[in-house]
Length: 145
Image (cartoon, rainbow, N blue to C red; front, side, top):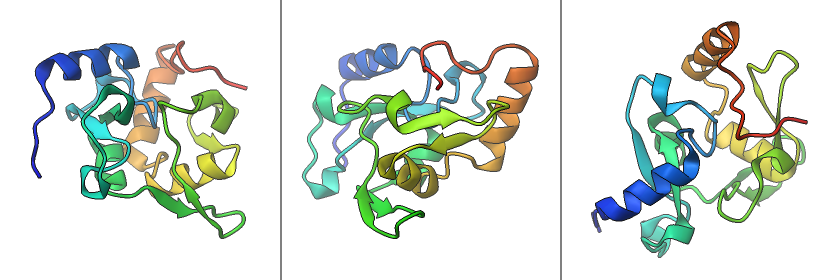
């Protein structure tokens, strides 16, 4: 089950992301660990290695997501599907805190994803803070409400 994603697909997925994790919006340019192709529907659950099932992900988000497809919405306690970057728009489900350091879940999908993938883990928050101070955050390709 350790099928390797072809290099040609990896390049497309990376280019499509404009250099940012499609979950936490961490910049690949300033990341301390490499980025990877993430299967939105995990291979273990029958997810295929096709462009519409692949996302560009930082190591942290990929590690926390692993084989998860659902998580609890902390507001309602309901089990909800995680955010799907191929079918949903980031700015409809997430926003930035007033200081642009924390990702805020606006919908059940967003809240469940923030919690499950730990989008506000300390390393990413520290990186956002530094990048914000250098006027390099938030990313231009992610709309904020």
